[in-house]
Length: 307
Image (tube, rainbow, N blue to C red; front, side, top):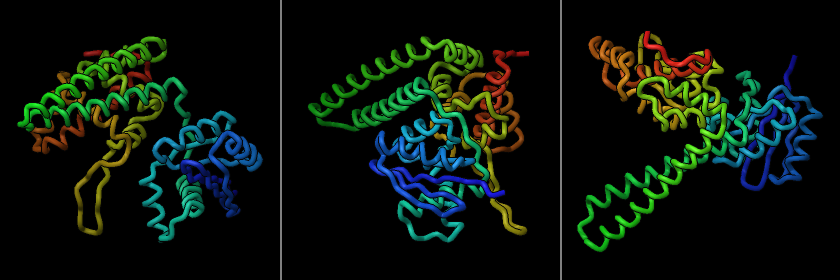
């Protein structure tokens, strides 16, 4: 039996919608009235999946509005959509065509809807993202300060560094208040922080950026984060396995955790190095093992145990 899949291309002011297998295409404004019309029209179609491409945050309100009406929504990686379009030989690119490609991708790959983060989780994600941006600016300004020779410019950079440090402290306070004010988040943070080497920054990044943690199996969660290696091969030729895609902020947090002191992870890393694995390969494997451990801890609701 044919399924009804919906693809939505989201831009700042407009929504282009495509329906498969009927081939229907229509457009609406991306405003409250347009979202209400879209919800009503899609409910009448009873789709099995409604897919939106992640577009710099414009899709968030749309996905939340549709999910609130009970529609099966999933937000997809734009890189996967581009690769799928190339596989189809789809060279033309317009918003209606993009919407149809998204619908086709959802249909062909059997996408399943995932629960969307609630408003509080999205706020925490925004805070964590802003903290990461401030840190990146701090690193850049500190490097400039070291290289700068002109005294008056060094003073200018120092003032900016001081302001950024003050903003970072304020954000850390806001993030801490947000986490500790939510019993569910507080319990999650305590469970995650029970693992040696996992501190507040790592645990809060995972809570904000990976709400699926503890709800998927180890292969699914590794693939979602982008820590599941895939191999290039053709005939007798065998390429190297590598990782990619997924959630880079979560991977960065896990790499940070993999480098911290944890006797179990260190022993695992040392075994890999002794077996001749390159350091980067070993680090990726440790990060994946850490993710598996954290996923199991939240799944079973049990803290880290050394035994």
